[in-house]
Amino acid sequence: MGINTERDIEANLQIGPTDQGMVRLFVEASGVEIPMDFTPEEAEEIAAEISAAAKAARAKG
Image (cartoon, rainbow, N blue to C red; front, side, top):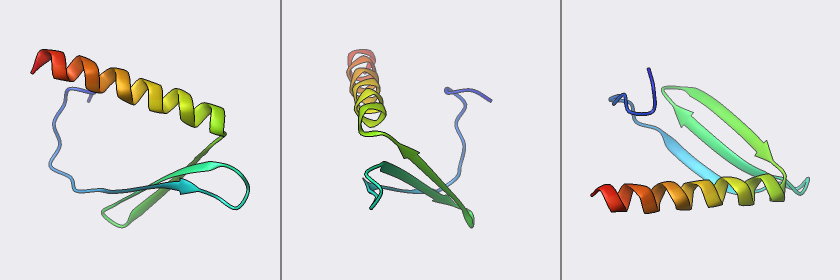
């Protein structure tokens, strides 16, 4: 399985700050919950990667 492998799975994604000063990505799918905490700096790097991926996807579309 890779990034280009399509899957028929529904998931919910929530993003927000924690009371500990972290940024949490919270994924829930099929009864499985995955909380992922990042420093604000890491979250900004992830946001930049998402933005770059969106730009690249737009160019292919």
